[in-house]
Length: 111
Image 1 (cartoon, rainbow, N blue to C red):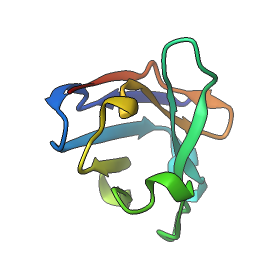
Image 2: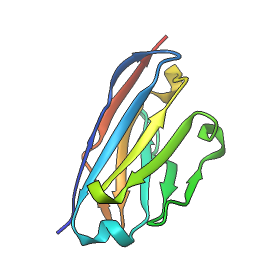
Image 3: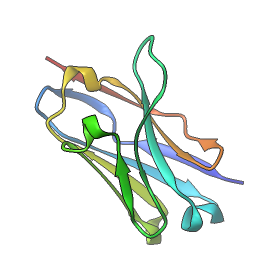
Image 4: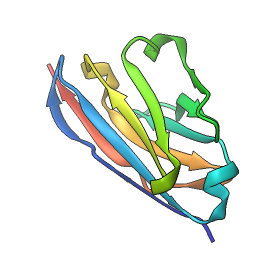
């Protein structure tokens, strides 16, 4: 059984930073690609970034300069460092591994 818990969201002013955490239980973490996604109100869920078990990261081009994905295999945790946040980054951020999703964490960026 895989269980995913995201944390670290909150309210931040434009230009600020947040670090999201995604803790994954279950053996799939060490071999799996983990992805961060987000869903803004009335919009489809979209990919933000992914990271392989060896730490190879990929980003959506529009977020590459401001977001950094990383993982700590010893802690079964993937992080998303978000800098220079903009109001349009406001969304629920979700973590995914294989077909498993977390419950999401809300990020709100005020202007």
